[in-house]
Length: 166
Image (cartoon, rainbow, N blue to C red; front, side):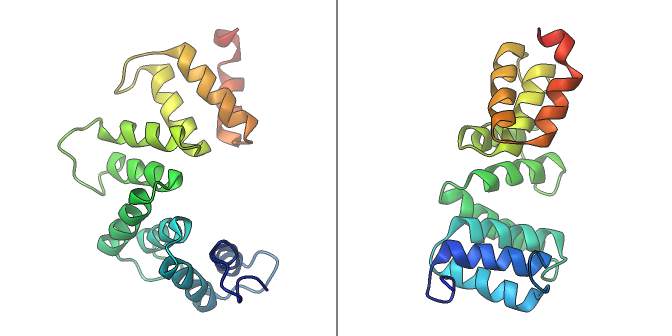
């Protein structure tokens, strides 16, 4: 297996599969080992995933301080999902911010880096003019990109607003 041969991307995939029991028996301890090995190799997806696990507390014990540290490590490496997740942490009040609109900027960064959930969140705010200037035309362009990448929430959003869009 390439994960056992040091391939960090395979380590992340194995860690995710083991954490979920996807195609194999669920083994949280083994999942964490693979993710930690990938983190040691500098894999930003592993940093993001481990930070998320720490924030949720189901795979590993809840530790919000460490969760934030790993999410920020992934952000420094340019991880798209980490940008979006950090935005959600800001929006939900898990992280204090001086600017109550800062979270939308993180959704935008996630979207620009290719995260479909970031595209969905950012375009939703653009479309409705929530916390940022209303721009339905740009919102539709971004939603369509997310749809092409298979994001289900974006498909639902487009369907819900289809009469306004045309």
